[in-house]
Length: 113
Image (tube, rainbow, N blue to C red; front, top):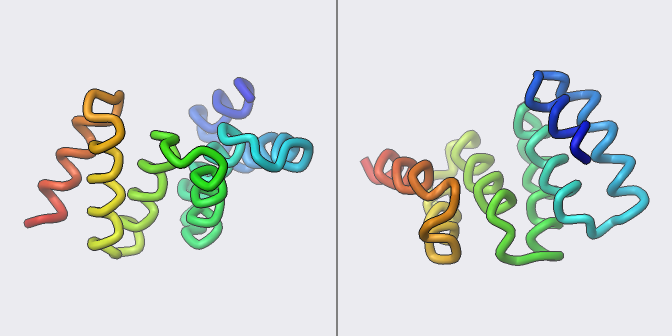
């Protein structure tokens, strides 16, 4: 899992996606792998697949902050402002002091313009 994250951070998204996929195959409800896979699909512009991965992660762990933010960013990338706004607000409700709280607040401000 750590290697997959490192590869994604270095721009080797396809290789990271393979590793996350291997983990999901062995552990279908591994929230970190599902979220990581969703982030890779988001990076690749494969929004429907990203959404499915984030939703699977949230089904396993409804409050997973990275999956909520990933889902919000997926909706924003697709131009679905209402759903993006809803997910950014959900993040702040569950994680008001979370690592991405400032990002969520800024996104909400931008989406409301």
